[in-house]
Length: 228
Image (cartoon, rainbow, N blue to C red; front, side):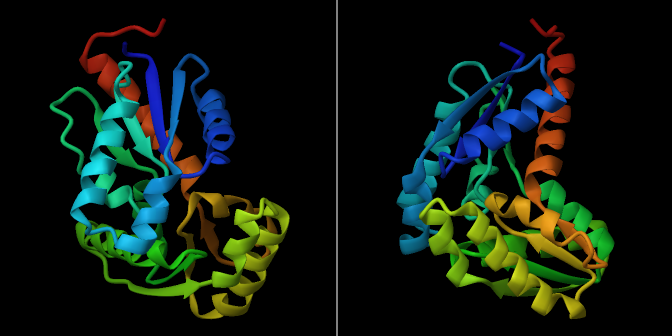
């Protein structure tokens, strides 16, 4: 116990992405993954306020922590707001991957464009960004862009086409924005195609994992635990 960081994913592809990030930032940590694709599928059909879904997300977060993780990160932006409210009994810290991204976005505004490939992720991400702005005491205008035709490529495993479709739509809509927020972790590769856009394009994996590692190290210090 004490050197374990756990992730709750809703897509298998995220295991490699987040495992690599965690190893790069903190090679001393034990990294564990729990994949539950049905949580996102049900959130899209039932809505994130569904009582049964909320219960299952909380149970999944606790399951991810069962082997002694001090920090559990939900990497799905659609259910992240549910996940971070998990009652942990002080046994671990529950995080959502996109909160650090939102905190940074509101400092880069005021015109924030939130981009998603799945409609169910837009409202939760917009709510998060607005909440971050309130906490930071800044005024922003948060608009959303749904690139619905991109998601089918992700589901088919054609990540290159998924990323290209997103990049084209973002480039066409970006002129009225000060910062772009990529609402889904799977969208992170888009940043490489938008380096010359002239405005900041934010994705959640790198910022979120860095925050999770810092949180775990602080928790480990508080518990007087040493890495193994």
